[in-house]
Amino acid sequence: MKKRSIKRFLRYIYLKLVRIQDTPEKIALSFSVGVFIGIFPTFGLGGIIMILICYLFKLNYIAGILGTFIMNYFTSPFFWALSYMLGDFITTGEIKWRGLERTGAKIFILRYLLGNLIISILCSILSYFVVKNIIITYRKRKRKVKPSSS
Image (cartoon, rainbow, N blue to C red; front, side):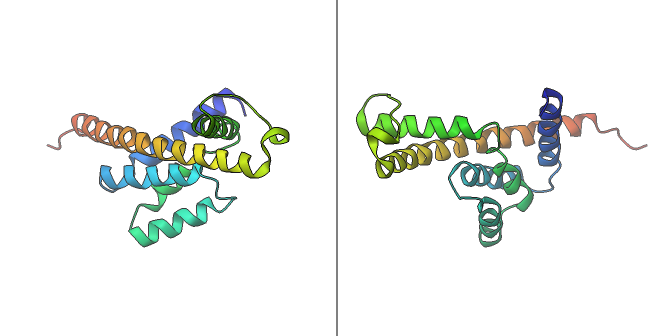
C-alpha cells in the first residue's frame, strides 16, 4: 500500500468517526473497546465479537468496528513483538528476545498474552481520550464555521 493510500484510509476513518451521530463519550467508548478487541488475539473473530459487545452493551457499531482496524497488516508485527517483549520483561525482569527453541511454546504464548493484555488495555484507555477529544474539537469547530441562516 502506498503512502497516499494510507493517508486516504486514515482520513476515511477520521471522517467516519467524527460524523457519527452519538455522544462523544459513547463514540469514544465504542472505539476504545474496538481497539482492545482489535489488538487482543481473537483469531479472526474480532468483528463478530465487537458486534456482539455493541449489541449487549448498546455501544455504537460503526465506532467499535473502526476501532478494530488498529490491528492490520502494518501494525500487527509491531504489536506482536511489543506484546512478547513486555510479557517477557514482566516475567523475567529483563528484555531479551528469546525464540520458541529456548522458552517453549507454552511459556512463549503465556508471555505474549500477558504483554498483549497490558498493551490492549493501555491502547484502549489512550484511544478513549484521544477519540473523545477529536470528536469534541471537531464539533466545536463545526459549530463555529456553520453559517447563520437569515
